[in-house]
Length: 209
Length: 209
DNA sequence: GTAAAAGTGTTAAAAATTTAACATTGTTAA
DNA sequence: TTAACAATGTTAAATTTTTAACACTTTTAC
Ligand SMILES: NC(=O)c1ccc[n+]([C@@H]2O[C@H](COP(=O)([O-])OP(=O)(O)OC[C@H]3O[C@@H](n4cnc5c(N)ncnc54)[C@H](O)[C@@H]3O)[C@@H](O)[C@H]2O)c1
Ligand SMILES: NC(=O)c1ccc[n+]([C@@H]2O[C@H](COP(=O)([O-])OP(=O)(O)OC[C@H]3O[C@@H](n4cnc5c(N)ncnc54)[C@H](O)[C@@H]3O)[C@@H](O)[C@H]2O)c1
Image 1 (cartoon, chains in turn brown, yellow, cyan, red):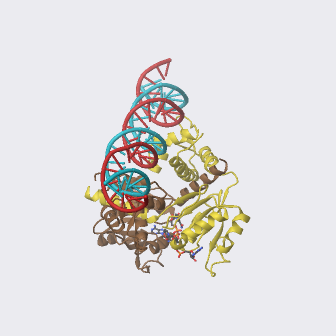
Image 2: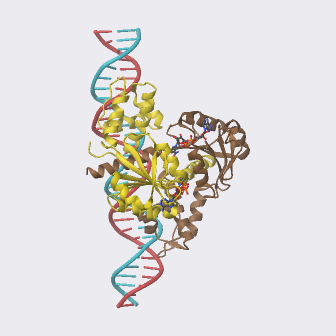
Image 3: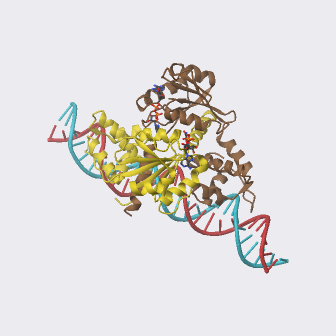
């Protein structure tokens, strides 16, 4: 397996999420078309993705849920796991910490940062909130690789720069302000407004035919 | 203009966001390569998108920020605006209401719904919280077209069904549980875990070369 | 025992998206 | 005045992503 398409990476994460639910329900095997239905894609695409990662199901019984979960883990997780931090423990930051807690054993939110003195020193859902001043120090000490940005938009650019300087290798930016990172740092940005506008657009489109 | 690519729609929303910031800063014109830089894409792609919507800039001065904002609005917004509701006024729901409030004049969050009696009857950031029992009624009365789902994952499927039955035409699902909607209802799903796993994957990839 | 059915895996084709190439045109400066 | 420049707009090519086609294999039904 040399080079997985970006879209395949995303789907693998989604397949795993779906498979974990199946496992909970006691399902041991699953067909490509079942996965496809859940994800609103085609069975061919599922089979193709699995082909790319070299997984082969049992003919006529489909895929072994447990095996597949493990294989996807081998591919997208890093063995030792990855430590993550959240910058900006406001509404969204807190919601995210709460949401992520314990969701994936290989993704650990180990620290949060803020500038508000009332928040610094507290822990939220088990995650300690540090002063942003200590970013570099804590990132090094805790071997944090990924940062999630949930600071006010006006601080987005500065925060990204701080993260990069602290040695972070990946940034997930939830502020609506695009930031720049140097080569070697992976950046993902998401704005909920864009998603909502997209939905609104297609609703409008459907109405007017 | 017959058929805009899905990706172009997303980018138009992002261009507008960037342009609005420029406008605030008093910038009247902008070059394709400037927009491109902000969005981490190429200038060609920007020009191509604008070509698709039939906007023509002034040679050597670039694009008129105000004009372009208006044109993008004409394309992606609906004239009368669209009323939106949020189902599940918990951590994420509240954060979203707070975030969206007043962001786009054509996207109005006019109601929220919950099952928790302590929440029903209150308003949050000016948005009234109704009982989920009243969904159909309020959706009709307020002419709500789009629903954002932030209920616990276990209620996602039922909630989607309720929304469809109430006559909603577009759903933005932030629960990690994929749902199904009939033809004629536009569905967009987003799971933050997938984004985080993607970032983690590319960080790992970069480390191991 | 054999044919039909229902899966998987893979190669090939199609479609969507991005990138390149380049013609065109105001602007600037020698 | 005119050549160089730096931008846009557009057609064509390349790339990425999805979909189709189909060979193959086990199970099931008769
Ligand atoms: N709330 C949402 O649902 C939502 C959705 C999408 C995007 N966003 C974006 O996420 C960001 C946060 O939104 P929110 O609603 O949580 O806002 P918030 O004001 O509740 O939280 C921001 C937090 O960041 C802290 N902060 C401020 N400056 C900081 C700095 N320089 N370094 C570290 N921490 C700092 C503040 O003290 C606060 O705790 C905003 O950019 C917002 O646009 C929010
Ligand atoms: N918190 C996050 O950052 C985050 C991020 C991504 C996804 N999510 C997902 O979003 C959803 C909400 O997360 P949260 O952290 O806000 O949870 P939460 O428990 O804080 O909020 C859920 C809200 O939904 C209400 N509710 C429960 N059943 C309902 C029903 N049938 N109809 C209407 N309302 C109902 C609850 O009363 C509560 O107010 C979950 O599915 C979660 O997985 C959350």
